[in-house]
Image 1 (spheres, rainbow, N blue to C red):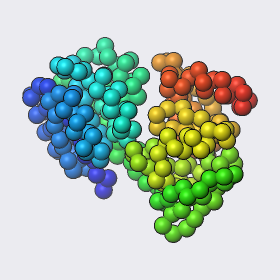
Image 2: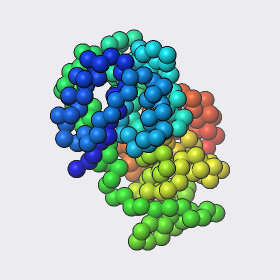
Image 3: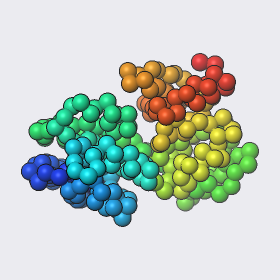
Image 4: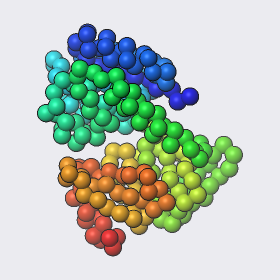
Length: 254
């Protein structure tokens, strides 16, 4: 069973209690923590990096949920943020921050269960065909060592994309399956950028030569489809749009 650890951040007790009861009814939710303000939540997350999802209110005293989300992204790229608020006018800002979901109060139990199921499905997908590995050197080739074997890869030919599973590991999507590495995306970016790879998002690096489709989104971002892994839709965040367009124009005929 996929286990999910959740954190509720809301300054109103009735809202926390209602959400807690709904989450408690979902068997995959194995841990539910609560914080009453954004600053406390930031301190909590720095001590508990294994939290999978945060239900984050927006209108809170001292620091609002949008600012909390910005701060979280600087030290935890693994946790999924679901904004849970009584106001719909913040939706665009929320998704610019790459929120996993945006749920309005009063809470709809079916809506919350659906969001958690999406999270479970994404975790299951990451676990398929995955071996634990670690990059041990890099030159013209990259060597990934797993528990049972060592895999030698030619990056430009064999690596399609890399994503962040949690803050201290990444997933290499290769022509021969998915391999887990104990390297951060930041370190991988330094190694692979000179070899035709590009950071499109806080959670993704792509092989520019393996992009099969580029679609513009309504929020002025882009969505990439990659060879071999067409279901893994890769976003290009606004922060990276200009550099990405330049990189594609230079190295990719699409």
